[in-house]
Length: 471
Ligand code: B12
Image 1 (cartoon, rainbow, N blue to C red):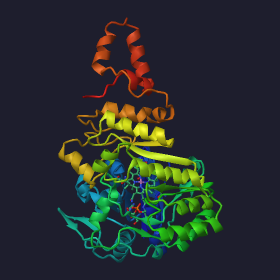
Image 2 (image 1 turned 120 degrees about the vertical axis):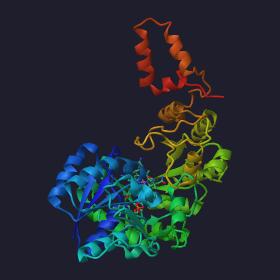
Image 3 (image 1 turned 180 degrees about the vertical axis):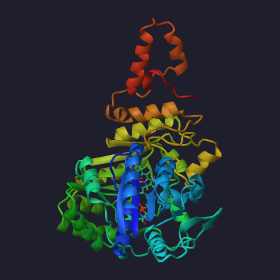
Image 4 (image 1 turned 120 degrees about the horizontal axis):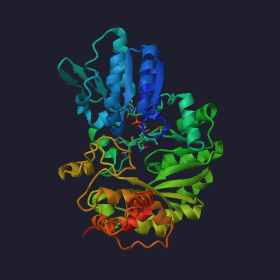
């Protein structure tokens, strides 16, 4: 059967998804004809519709994170207008927010959770002309009602899955776009329950359906790297696994064998407090060039109470030290800005911690992801953004009473400079916006737009001139 898989990356730049690749591999193994379409911009929708008219698939499946789902509200009606295919949507957003089916009347069904076998069952049922409304993991629109099927158990052994079948040209384009970096992932899930991350929402949904954190065997993971090395041209790897240090036995075997077999330098994510000295040394010996360290916030108490991260600043320092002593020098400190209950003063603690650790700053604007307990806190307090589409993780969208949207945006814009240029004072005389605008009245006409432009063009100036932490 002809199936089109659409991976939207609207506003994000080239990327690829191992999840979508895994679905494509399973469908192709079963003999289905799968075409992969990337959707990089809303301007490309006409092209997508044209391609769909040419491909004439019977099934069209869209992938969606929450932000991309908002974009799909404009895309799917246009696709529906040119195709009679069954249109479904899967991925994290429909999984944690299945009621989203109501938001796009042109959608026939959503696929919750791991999509390989539900989509395969759907394709088989359609091919055989069978009713597909009772397939586990699917919520299906039938007439005026929605059939909400149960989730099937999680795939216990990831080795049963074929390797992701990524689109060759699109993947190579994304690798080239990121200076030769190829992203791979060998695990699913995470056993920590950080209230801002979708993992705890997913593990709640899957309660009673099997162990949530799973890994491919080291053998299969190494085979997958070899397969990709034969397919793509890349210079180094990024292991996207949420917590690669979680299973120490796996970690030991995988990196020992990686060191013997491959020469590709690599980066991986790292949770403070989960690395020992031998592990750091093994990482380095295997070729680790750097790590992305989940610092998240600089204030210990805040990190614990709001973000559920119990480790101390001392433990973060220790992890950084272990990496440096082992010779892993590129340490990216990942932090979030604009969190519920955060204030400008608390944010400055993040700047101070990052300065003292001398890490490479890597910052995100906090986004309240559906199904997470921190998003529920935002909802209860009526803080959820009124803006439906935004630049994911880079654009401030929440106006907290104690930390305004403008302040968050400026803190985000100047964060890296403030961390790197240590002599820049953090305690600076802020002038509230209104006062500044009032001050303009005393300037002569031609100066006003110039000052305004200058303040907006130079974020650092905006930070110092316009904003003041609120009491
Ligand atoms: C790795 C990763 C990435 C990598 C992917 C690289 C790669 N080579 O695959 C990159 C860096 C590209 C990436 C980008 C982004 N990511 Co990301 N990412 C992850 C991470 C850590 C793991 C995802 C993964 O690969 N899992 C393994 C695969 C096999 O599983 P999977 O992706 O979940 O896919 C399965 C199901 O979801 C489902 N499924 C997925 N797609 C589809 C499509 C169809 C049609 C169907 C039926 C089913 C289906 O079936 C798949 C197979 O079982 C997750 C966290 C997590 N634990 O899920 C965040 C996560 C998915 N990412 C997230 C976000 C926000 C983003 C970005 C928006 C960030 C940004 N600003 O750039 C972009 C969005 C990209 C896009 N176009 O959608 C959020 C999404 C939250 C939300 N509710 O929207 C997550 C959950 C992290 C979090 N903050 O909690 N990401």
